[in-house]
Length: 147
Image 1 (cartoon, one colour):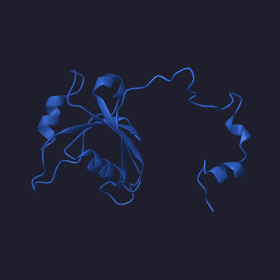
Image 2 (cartoon, one colour; image 1 turned 90 degrees about the vertical axis):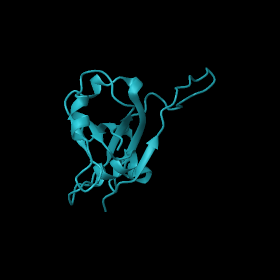
Image 3 (cartoon, helix red, strand yellow; image 1 turned 30 degrees about the horizontal axis):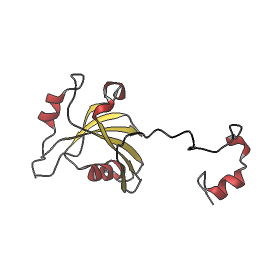
Image 4 (cartoon, rainbow, N blue to C red; image 1 turned 180 degrees about the vertical axis):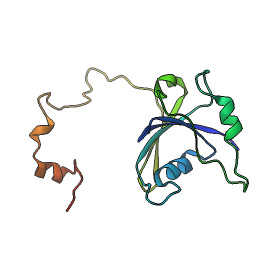
């Protein structure tokens, strides 16, 4: 089985090896294998192995299918100062996963420069978050509504 490498950004920054596809991995990480471990997750699929900071040999030794043939769900390779050792060139698709395991891929693409005539945002610089009342924020659903 193929080993995939994922950089999780939220809720924990970590490098994880897995034999799950990105959608399966997102669902597994969001819903977990234990009851009650539901949370959102943001992660990036990495394109293979790179550099010598991480122990790739360990990943190949330990990221193997279980005895019953099921794929290895997760093998943590790093949980400390991970992001700073990963070059942008190996970062591929970014995934957003909901608490119930639905995963949305955001494909990597080139940044297009805006022309002088294109305005990205037309919001006055003086706008502040404090100017929005709580009732108005609720109507725009900027904050969760707990009734």
